[in-house]
Image (tube, rainbow, N blue to C red; front, side):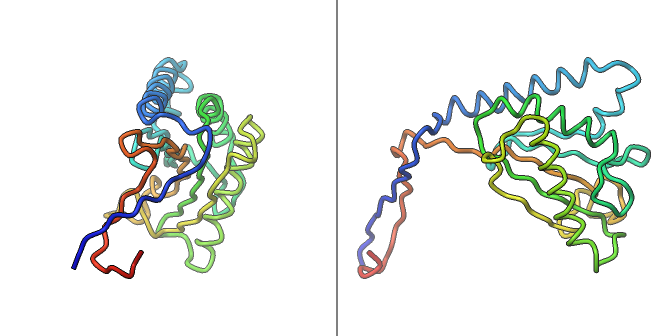
Length: 193
């Protein structure tokens, strides 16, 4: 058996260099965290509702519920003022990135199974609409996902408020210059190619 390699090229135009993209993600993360640190005392609780990190998928921003500061009205896709403020904040900083956007809604384990899936996708859709109103163009939205209670942030406590969240990801688009945009696959079977 011989091993062969096949090169599949991504022919998308306008993609960023991976190093530049990584710098953009970390720069945006730093700017957002600095802005949250400078909030006036009466808005300091907003910071506790935002988790920002850079992952393999891209720049991930999680907006999480707190006991006294929910993002949405109870068992509703309607945003609270807190949720609107946070999504405007995300659009203000994330809107500067050229990357496509994914929005995922999550519920907690206390949400009735019959409505959890529908509610999570409706909340993702509501968050997308607010991001769009706040300046992110419609063509940038690539995914709208409802996860219900299937991926809790706090698995040991299904009812934890932090499990109710919206995750916004600015998706990586860079091409790796080491491979010239090729994804290399190895096959043992000669007839696979």
